Length: 84
Image (cartoon, rainbow, N blue to C red; front, side, top):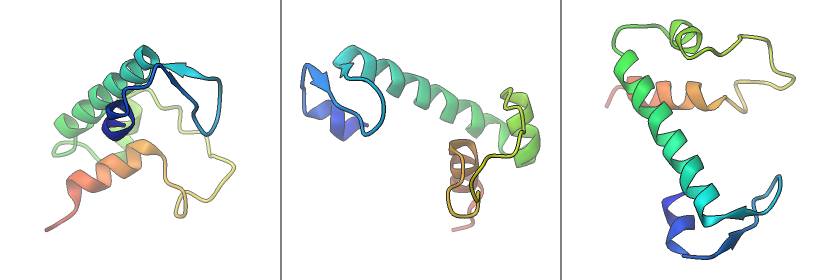
C-alpha cells in the first residue's frame, strides 16, 4: 500500500470495489497497520485461534481453501511466528 500511495494519485481504482480517493487508501492503510500492531502484541501470548477471537473474527468457515488463500490475520500471525 505504501507503493500505491507513493503514486500520489487523486483517485485509485482497486481490483474490487468502487473507486477510492487518496484519503480512502490512507485510511485503509492505517487500519491495516493498526490491526497488524494488535496481532504483533498478542502473538507471543496467544494461539492463532485466540488472536482471531480477541479481534472479533467470527470463526465461520470461509467458502474457499484457507491453505491456498489464508485470511489476513493468519498471514500476519504466521509472519510474526516464523522461525528465522
